[in-house]
Amino acid sequence: MGFASFKRYLVIMPPMLWLALFFLIPFFVVLQVSLSDPALSRPPYTAIFSWNGLWPTGFLGDLENYEFLLSDSLYVNSYVNSLKIAANGSLVCLLIGYPMAYLIARADARMRNTLLLLVILPFWTSSLLRVYALIGMYSPNGFINSSLTWFGVIDAPLQLMQTDFAVYSGIVLTYLPLMILPLYSALEKLDGDLMEAASDLGATPLATFWRITLPLSMPGIVAGSLLVFIPSVGEFVIPALLGGPDQLMIGKTLWTEFFNNRDWPVASSVAMIMLAFLVIPMMFLRNTQRAAEG
Image (cartoon, rainbow, N blue to C red; front, side, top):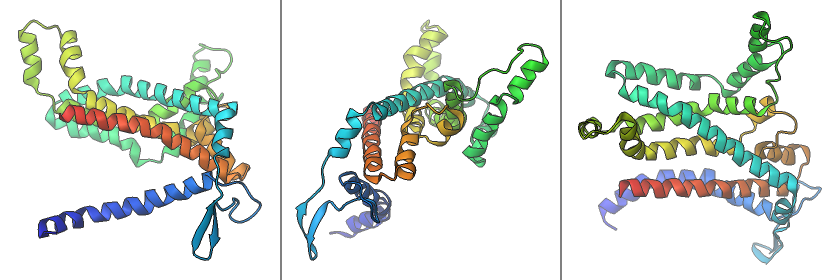
């Protein structure tokens, strides 16, 4: 091994060790728990290997937990509802975030840093505090209902809490900056000469947007959508505080299995299936980036 190769390995070794320590090892721990059975012991699950001293002599695990999850409508509905809410929330963030990112990218250079600071500013406060701020706005005696009642628009408080609208607004409030920043990065790199050339050739602003701006900003759209979609699928705080008791999302189901039912094998299986759902869009992002670079 040459000195150049040694330096390259020296550079990549710390992140590889970090991933091994904080991703691969926990991943295999959760995987082996998902293949076990619940038990009244510590830890509350059975071993998946039989041992003879230091050596495993047999495999005792099974796929019963996965079969149970895929056959029970409660868990299937939790996955479907989580994917639906995450996808719709990502779409709303895209519809709101794209114009904002475009305006920031086309703003005067002296204003861009200020506008970007306003986008990042919500990250300086806890997401939990922002969700509680929505509760203060949406509650029956909150700001919105009190204002509408005072102006005589409504006679009785609107049902804003424990609705899909409240959950979607919580997702937008929490994750919108994660949509804007990748979009801004993609839009800021666009060559203005392309738009000028399209205008000189007779293209309308709408045609220029559809045929030039939108395709060239697609990497930012994909990256921003995944940055919103992936954490939204496993979201727990937002549906627990803003959604109703029948608001099925996989994050709440996972928490219930771990802490209420104390069924670690089923909870681990829930986490593994959720991870499998998230691998697909991550592979899509990688292929999209490769296509854009090629």
